[in-house]
Length: 263
Image 1 (spheres, rainbow, N blue to C red):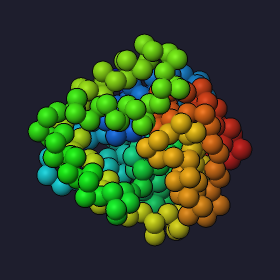
Image 2 (cartoon, rainbow, N blue to C red):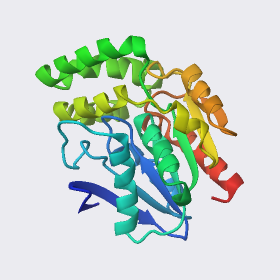
Image 3 (spheres, rainbow, N blue to C red):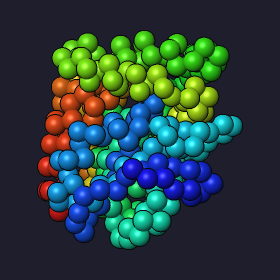
Image 4 (cartoon, rainbow, N blue to C red):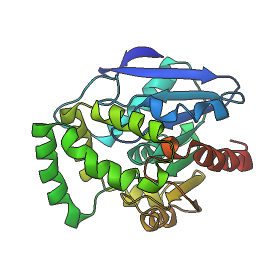
């Protein structure tokens, strides 16, 4: 693990593995680079793997005021530049991390070879927006404990808690988030409208839906896939935080996808 200051913010990151090709991993909202602890070993023998805490999350610098997804994509570009990673990279993102990966592909098509996303959080339905923003005010006032119950119930389904130590560890990390940063990032999500840019993506895209995801059910993930020209869609028995919940299934999908493309 290391830290770097770029684009006006301090970020924590890890670059591991070996090879000429690079895979960038982008975690979910309220996640951190530890979300990929059981994913990285699957790829690091054949390629470099870059994972990091997005601004506002994990041990990266916290955020206030307004935040745009352009900034999140630019942070990836800044990391690649600072680490001397030239050429195209593949990206894999979970939930909001999926939206960031897709936006990077739209903003930096010349740097993107392929994108794999699970349960991509590319916006919030208009009818849910007001209630979601009101809930954020309570989270800012009461802290992450206010948010964790329903987030775990809908995102980390009881059916996926066979490894109870893994679940409890993830829940505890989730509780450690900065409420104000979490709310800032959530407001960014609430303001997203990616429909137009998704229709203009030209790189290969894989969208993965989780059968037990009650935050972004498979129908929503599949609808996103249908918006992207030529995108592939698969559904696996996982949930919203599938890199943590079912790392082998998640990794298998991405590995097979990248191998078919030689990306």
